[in-house]
Every structure is written in structure tokens, then in C-alpha cells.
Length: 311
View (cartoon, rainbow, N blue to C red):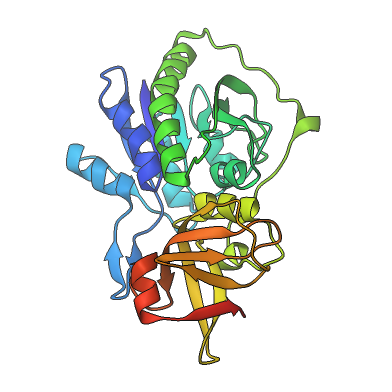
């Protein structure tokens, strides 16, 4: 089965690896986002999928188009005569003129139980909203976002302290072999696509830095879910007021809900522990990162700073 693979981050690279490891598939080309500057030194860095593909297939093309409707790019794809395109976290909407190219259509992996959480941040949304379960969907792409017919779904419960990192790992472990199976069924003509129940659709958005800002009006449970969903990006941030009256932006990296009660917005120290008052019970902060500083354990933060309340 001749495949053109569309995908960019490390999450996508895991699915690409599953296809490269199976001799049934011939991944003829990779399409990914352009290289981007990373870190404080802005070092130009290739996407994880590009690094993997060039290591395993250095003689095959990697396309990083700025404009997906570029005629030269489309003709290059057409010349590959792909049986299918596989799209996993590519990061951009693919135009219809590209979707029309492959023989068997375009297969997408979406880490939710579609039609729930259509959009670019479904794993974060499931954790942040306290969903009891989530899953992996293999689907065919149509002209609308995450709207196409379903090929298969697998559902599983979210763990009590599920994080974005742990959920990503579970989705990859479950989703990669599922993708392989459905592509083989597609090639054999044995798939049975099912229309989504569009009346049940919910949506998630592209996350921005401000989505991680917290105030003391939020509950401890809500903040805990945000930390587990939004680490490392966009991160959960608060502005602490230090004892000397100066504000300090802090990223909360790890915390847990407690049964203790302190006034909302207040910061209390119990030995080497930091407690933060919310609209419900207190949140115990284990790990945090002051702006422009390194990540600190609570005991190390206490040695250097004295925060008294939320600004």
C-alpha cells in the first residue's frame, strides 16, 4: 500500500514508525510543517517525523510546504500515485485538491471518541473537563474538520491522575496498531465506514498561553485538571504576591487536591509544603517554576521566595 504520510510532532512520529515497520506499507513521502526555531537560542529544529523519516528513508522526499495549494507541491504528490494519505497531527487543514489525490482516500487518527472533542486539543480537553473516558478514532477525512465517517473506535477510562503525557503514551500504544489494521482493511475493501452523529459533536480549540491562567475563583479540582492537561503547553500560571509586595509569575507544574481549608487566594506554608487556597479546598503545590527561573521543588522554592497570596 503506497502511502503519503502527513504529520509533524513526536506524537505523530510514533504512528509513522508503526507504518515504516510493516512491510505491507510503502511510505513514499512525508509532508510535515517547516523547521522551526526552538529554545532561547532559537536553533532551527526539524519536526520529529522528518528526523525519523530521513533516518530510515534518506532517499525519499520530505515536503514542508508553506502553501498547501502550491501547484508544484500538488503535482509532486500526484506523481507519487498514492493509495492513501495518512494524517496524524499534521497541524494544518488540508485542501480538497490534495484530499482528492489518493485512490482509497485519506485516513486520520483522532485521539477522542468522535464526535466528541473535534478540533486540535482533544486529549487536553478530555482531561481538563474531567471526562470519565476517552479513546482513539480512526476515520476518513472529508471537507469539514473531524467530520468524516468513522472506520473504528476504541474507548478506555481515564486514570484518576491522568496527565497529558500519560494519555499521549496510551493513545499511541492503542492507536498505532489500530491504524495499521484499518489501513489493511481499507486496502482489502472490507472497511465499513459509519457516519458520525453530528448532533452530539463537541469542540476543542487551539490552546493559547492565556488558557492556562488561573485565579482563586477556580476550584482545586478544576486547577488540578488544568495542570494535568496543560503541562507542558500552555502551562498553568498564576501571579503570586511576594512578602515584599512585588508580583511574581509562577508556572505550577505539579500539585494535588487536599481536604484542607484555607482562604481562597492565600498561600500558606506548612513545613516544606506550599498550600494554595481555592474556591473549594486547598491545593498542595509540589513543583513550580518562577518566570525565567528553573523548575523548583516546593522546599527549594520556600528557601528563595516568600509568596503570601495570589496577586
